[in-house]
Picture 1 (cartoon, rainbow, N blue to C red):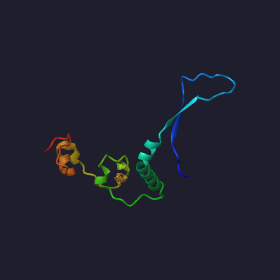
Picture 2: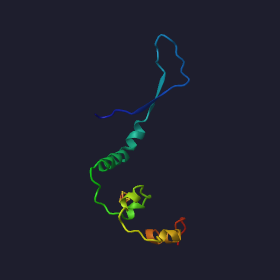
Picture 3: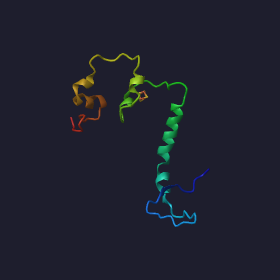
Picture 4: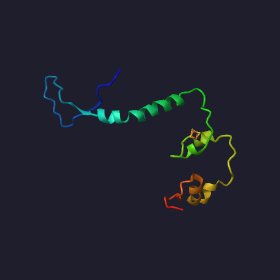
Length: 113
Ligand code: SF4
């Protein structure tokens, strides 16, 4: 069903019941059509991700750079199960090695190397 508009209704806390079952004005509506349409692409991404999450089997994707960029994935512990991990990971040495690993030419604090 195509949407004509999107609005959020909330109770007007300044409203006073006039009696006679007249509730006009109790709810105030804010038109959010423009903001909603602007986020259509983002919402389509959420729906696509939910379809993947609902699959009965895990996707066949190996851990890699996508697990930390643009953010650390919360499923990292799960996906790394059974994968041998270094006893002393390079991350223990601090941010100075992060720039080389990511190749962005900056230290972990944003300064140029
Ligand atoms: S840790 Fe996250 S990004 Fe990396 S493979 Fe697993 S689910 Fe994908």
